[in-house]
Image 1 (tube, helix red, strand yellow):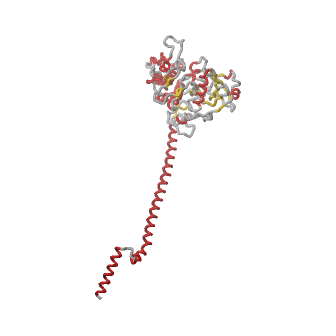
Image 2: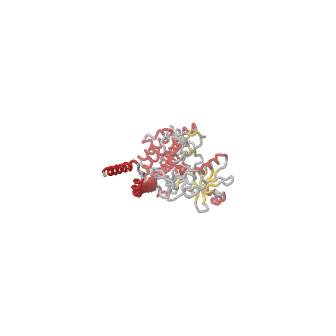
Length: 457
């Protein structure tokens, strides 16, 4: 019995030993067969948990992306609205965002909330200098292509009665288009290549440049040898007509002159700062400044315009063209043209607004023939400035504003281009003066209710 017991115990111990050392023996295999379902269950549960976690993470990531896009879109729209509200000169005429700009003046008063009523504001450099198209939309619609016959009918066969201006490049007629729109129709001379270049340049620039401070191109005609440009009609003609005409008319008051100065400054700022590359007018003067029914100014005559260098103060060399009395000295002597050349011309116009004198007048006494040469030494002395003022103003101006205008003019007509300011600096210096003229009752809108039917352009 003891032997059997010992053997049995030994056998049991041996089985135990084998169960550990040989897991695949029959008894052990039979014992573990019942554990397989629980292990598989654990594995399946583990895999399911991992898959659920992955799915959860994917959903979370997708929700975050959706939320981010929604926030980004909202932020972009809010930024666009902010940009639109702070842009006081230009309202985008396409869906592209606008640039922040200087505050505008509305009806003679400063308007910090937006642009002029009745004036659409502008556009960014990307919109301005995109590929040109003759059907590109401007401020009032697509630039149209007219037939010569249409414009002949509009001007009553180009009747002399409808002539409202003449210049180097052609004759301007008042006309009524087929849809009833009153327009200024410019028939260009065809002598030489310069006339053709002027035509192409104006069509190209004005079909792409849209600002409330630039005259709007409505369309053009290029039938055979005919070359005509159709512009919006400006009822009060040129600044030249109101400053220097011998016809009996009310002189421009101080407030109106300040607003004209600001409008012109904004026009040049737009050309210089929002053009890529900058656009240099090259022939800025009183005859290229047109006045609407409210005596707000727009710049015209881009036949001599040039695109400048994209570098800061970058120069381009070109043939000297322009008008005596307005030409910057470095441009007149060397042909080196920059945006500062326009600044000089602007200073000359500012002096005309201040003094009522023309840029060159050989009828004046010796030493007073050239306006800038005569005025510049006097612009730093208060007493001299008061002596220079246009007598037709009859003392109806602020002496403080007068001194500031004189200081701006003096900087603009500096002989050295590097000492002249940028138009982007001139604009903000003029805005407070126009605002002040509103407060002191210098607004001239009520003084010019009787508009000129056919102004001289």
